[in-house]
Image 1 (cartoon, each protein chain N blue to C red):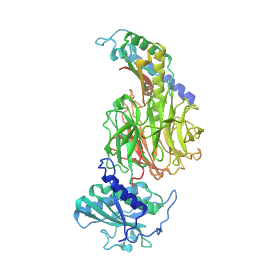
Image 2: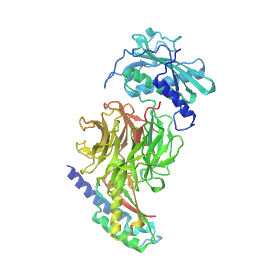
Image 3: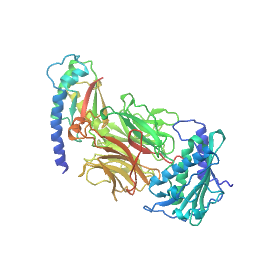
Image 4: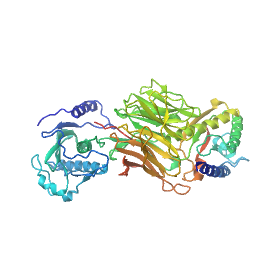
Length: 463
Length: 153
């Protein structure tokens, strides 16, 4: 067994020490990774990089173990990997009923002749062993079936309670090795969970894994909360709270649970987003008959006004290279999307279709701005993307109300929320659900939540 | 096209606003059991809210009449401080509506100030589209939900 201290390996090691210093309910627990022998460099014969591809057929048998508890864990992990990859729309997971070989292979190398007839091109094998102290170790290998070559081999160790993270990390490795771009499965989503009738709505800040598991409410519903956003590198959330009837943007530390007001601008602050380096936040502050875009440091200092148009300037979002800020403004009449320099100034309108454009959000890849569009010739709201220069507009989804896109950290998937129209004076049948969609416009699906949900914001990759 | 829709909305809004006033702000004689100078008094005998046209924050003529009465009432009950809350219908985005609701609250508060209510007695807040009073998803409900609501603090 050889150790290959890849950058990813070191990063995970560092995570261990950070997490052990801080026993935190809402923060992800660390997973240690260790390279297994046989891992080859770039042997993946499956070259599927590109926008739209046939889903890759992949077989994911149980990652069995030598005792009952380990075997169950191995089944569960295989199940989570399968669900992650299938949900992405980019993989076709082979039905286990088609497996010729049901159990794990003896020895490290599978008998590929048992897997070729299933139609799978890629195969996942592994072993799960519960260890002392509530730990679990999972060996995992990814194989290219036709040449019979190992693409990846890694062993992960973490607490048994944290087994789902191992599965998500493995799903990300599979995604990246087979598709040539980073995955997004080891991520979380913050959102607003809502309960009660619409005229007496209780809204709570909530966080869950991207597959809807480990859901947790972070506030108790005493005050209205809105528009949470994830910090790009730390376990922190910027969000808007009406605490004490003073609507302000707060920083929520997931580790300590502490909430602090971000900046002091004398009026309502709202629509926050972190700068790509995480050192500051841009947001809107109410000012007279409109709102301005301001930037403030996380400790409250360094407040600076970036726009002062007298109009409603709102929903600022940095480009990933930090040089520009997209925002929405009604300075020209109807609300449209503008792009300006990171220090304000030079604002240029980029949206020109019928209706209003809102909530611009820059792709982590930098090549697209996603938005909400409404109030044009159609009564429906739409979610779309365009290039930062305003060209290439594409509508991805539409409905009675769809709003607030957020990108997965790899820029490949969007999440937003969808409301159904209530009927009659009581609005019977109203619902609010999170939805994910591939940026090609395919593979739209509901993201299950315990309550009505809105305002999703995707986390960066955790590790 | 847009103008036509706007016009239609505005007409419905006016109708709905009248209906609303007839329902909840009958005006005229005092109702039994209501303490003068209380929030209930404001709602029942003065009118606690004014309505706005689609995407607009200008106080309408009917709204000015209500705010005139509010100003007189606040002069009568000089120890009352109030909060003016701006609200929007559901046909916009959360973030833009927060700003629009603030505009509406500011517009109503500015009118009250012009009518002699000291600025120090008033605070403003915006709930955007998050505090609808009418739960329907139709023009009538939206017309009611585009408002600035005054409440005793």
